[in-house]
Length: 62
Image (cartoon, rainbow, N blue to C red; front, side, top):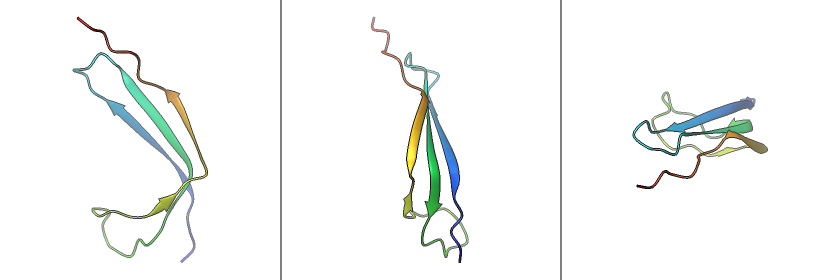
C-alpha cells in the first residue's frame, strides 16, 4: 500500500472560555498501520512540519 500524504487542520475552541480558539495545521501527514475498517482506534503517524495560524489568547481574569 502506498502512503498518502495530506495536511490536517485541528481547531480547539470552547465558547465558555475567554481564551478564544487555536488552530494547528500538521503538514505532510501520513498514517501508518491502517488495516482496520474504521478510525476509532489509535494509529501511528508522522508529519514534517506544522503551523499555528491562530493561537489562544491570555484568559480574562475576574
